[in-house]
Length: 273
Image (cartoon, rainbow, N blue to C red; front, top):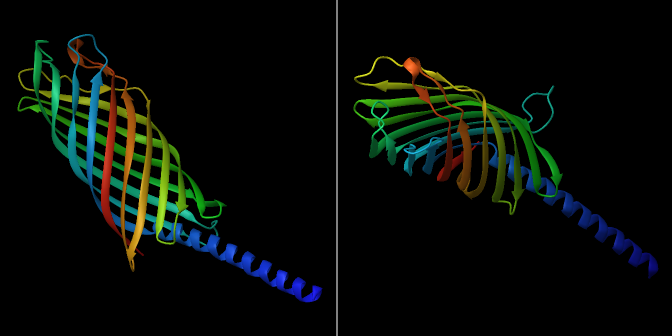
C-alpha cells in the first residue's frame, strides 16, 4: 500500500509540475503573440500647455482626435541573437481645435482664440523580453524617435515646434488568460535638437529658437484581447509630461520655457502574424 501511495504521489507531482511548466510556457506564448502584431487605433488626446511667463501667460487646453498605427515583433529571428528580441514602431497623429488664452507676440495684448493644432509622434523601440515569473514578462528597451506640433493660432500666426527623442523604457506584461494580455509601460526620453520656428505676418523673419536638451516622461497601461483567429482588439491609457526650455529668436524676441501634459486614450484592432 505504501508503495502504491508513493507511486501515486510521484505521478501527481509530475503531472502538477508538467502543468505548471505548460501554463508558464503558454502564458509566455500569449505575450509573444501579442507582441507580433500590426494594428490601427482611434486616439483621443487631451493637451494642456503652459508657458512659464508672468501674466499674460500663454496657455492651451483641449481634446484632439486622431489615429495611431503600431507594428511590433518578438521572437527568435536570428540564431546569433538571444531569444525574444523585441522591436516595435508606433506612429500617432492628432489634430483639432483647442482653446488658446494668451497674448499677441508683437503687441502683448491679451488674445483668446482657437489653436488648430496638429501633432505627430513616431517612436521605435528595440529590446529583449525576460520571463521573470509565471505569466509575467519584462522587456527593457532603448528608444528613438521624433515629435512635432504645428500651432496654428490664426491665418497670420503659426509656430512649429519639433524635437528628436532618445532614451529607454521598460514594458511589463502579464498574461491574465490565454487570450488577454495586460501591459504597463514606463518610458524616459531626452528631447534633443528641439526648437521652435514662428511664422508671423507683418513681422520680419524671426529665425528659429533652439532649445536645450530636456526630459520627457511617459506612463501607460494597455490591454490586448484575442477575439478570433489572428484578430485582436486592444486599448489603453497613457500620460506624458515634457518641458521645452525656451530660447532666443532674432531682434530681441524670446520663446519662453513651457510645460506640456498629454493624456491619451486609444482603442483599435490588431492582426497577429
